[in-house]
Length: 297
Image 1: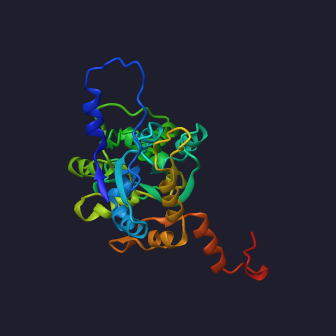
Image 2: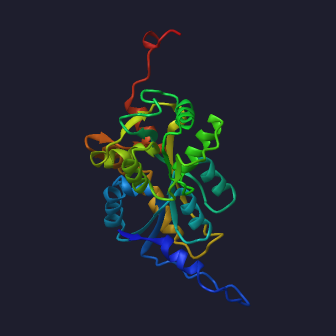
């Protein structure tokens, strides 16, 4: 499994002088023995990819090149045909990507949740609140330092949605837009003893190195589903469409879902499988409630 750092290369390309061309050259076909996976920093920072991908690589005899960026950037890579398959977590944006024809379909993979973390001193007094909107309102009212991903990621998308519901446009010295991945933002929040919105998987995987605690959890608003999407070869013929679909079929299969279910860090499961195959298997092993056992409302 190879890690690709796409954004510095993109930045360098942006700085090159623009040269007019008579015709746009055809995109170079992707290496048939390598799958380009554009995904979120949370799947990498949590260690899940290092756990999952070697199994796929060994089984299919291929290599997976990972581009770990924010969901917005991953979707843009898909729109440009620079990735074969996406594993991301911003449901409305994923659906839009498929509706616009850039992806063939979206498949449920897994879920976990977002959490609001902060210093034990808790200057905004949000500890124990199960209402993310109320917590954000108190952070803004107290102007307690908050570090935002600020990177168009799935986490950043969720954060902005919460601020909108809270009726706040966060601005001022207390609000820091980092433009970084989840791991970097957690380290920054730790240094500044600030609040941030994090995915649980990345926080748990880093928790031993952080002087931060979970302040808010359990709000349904913080639900965090992940989906996998093959890039549409009708739009980008150069992508490895067959290999991308093989990866999708493997990822949503029961064996891969069982791997996701078994992945733990510090004794905690970080993701809950959610594919159709997993849900069907769970339904078969869960006995139906009898009329006598059904609670009376």
